[in-house]
Image 1 (tube, rainbow, N blue to C red):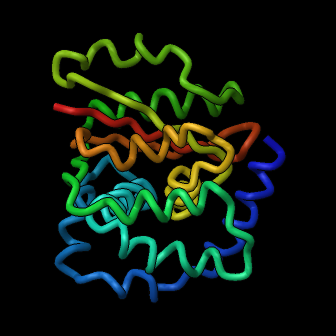
Image 2 (image 1 turned 45 degrees about the vertical axis):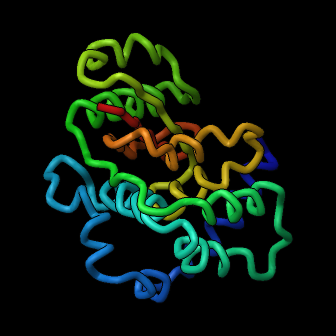
Length: 202
């Protein structure tokens, strides 16, 4: 966990210097298409940005690498996880955009609040939490990230998936079968913040 926290700290330093230059490399129509949560009243601005950035990675993985990852890697020693992310994103093109769903948001919110209050990590009571929506979705998955409130930090952390050998968080985010999402970022008593992303396939 300490190695992961050190890596995330480096990521945070880079993202704190992030400018609009990366976003300006994207066509405005693409940004509009990817920004599926823009008019969703129950999401915070950072939660909306989590969906936007995830959708941009799904829309054009190569451009996502060029606009976000390459600058991050400058001056840093690449790891097997960053190298594999470049390879994976190279293959990603025009995946379905994730649409925000209120029921997935409520599941994410409940888990983020409880994890934050208890200071826990992981996917406790996963099946029980999703059971009420399994008639609507025929597959679900969940990502959890810790330490940051900022959308960029959470999305990059989960895509790189440093230290997670099966890169399961990345696979969830780039899975072409998922078309629905709920996101909640809440306080966490051990890691300051936690971000929960819940995915569904209708």
